Image 1 (cartoon, rainbow, N blue to C red):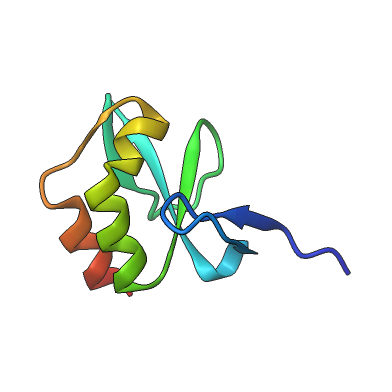
Image 2 (cartoon, one colour):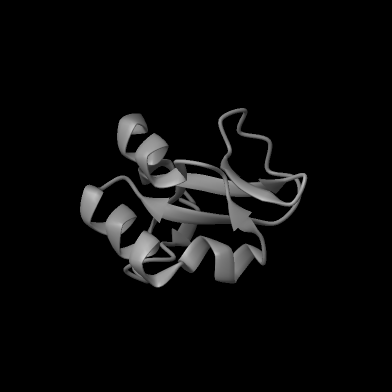
Length: 81
């Protein structure tokens, strides 16, 4: 059975897609992909506080998606885990 793997933008580890949170751009702003629609460009981040903080420090979501994060994006991600 094939398990789709994706890479975390913070720690750069490959993990099963179900273990990660997906981020996407909506109107030029980086937001969590809560509706799970895989269309368009998206990035993945581990469901851990360490990776969320590392991504915030590295500004990884902004760099990968070439857009500004929504207000409180990283706090919202921490609440989702």
